[in-house]
Length: 150
Picture 1: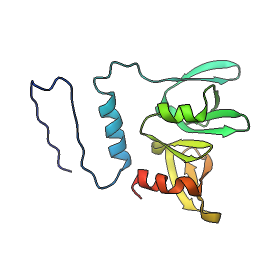
Picture 2: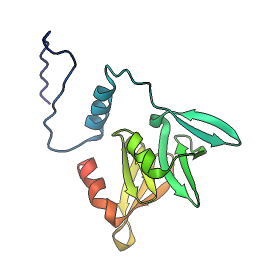
Picture 3: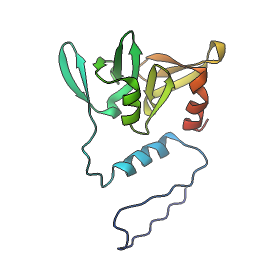
Picture 4: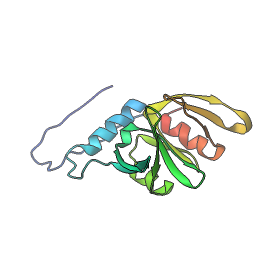
């Protein structure tokens, strides 16, 4: 990869342009890091409930967010289950570029995906590094593939 950096006192705020032919996990992480650079906003943490206790969870610790019955839940890397108090569409908008929607009821952390395999009826089964499985629905499959550069 070719990298060019121009340092100039006329630039008050850093500005980056990337020319890529496909999105990769590494590039997504770099973009996320660049967006956080010089950010005066606090680091995003989500509040979640487990065993009647409230926890503060960083997005990078989340593996998957999905609906289960009437609850919106998330699982972290060690597979702990937490109940979130926000609707899924709101979580999708506040989680960073490291997450992708896979169905009407689930959002996953790209860096926590172990593998994906074809399944029945045009869906794809997604397996997370912590062993949790879910399905990428047909209507979200194209966006998922584009996002991961497949």
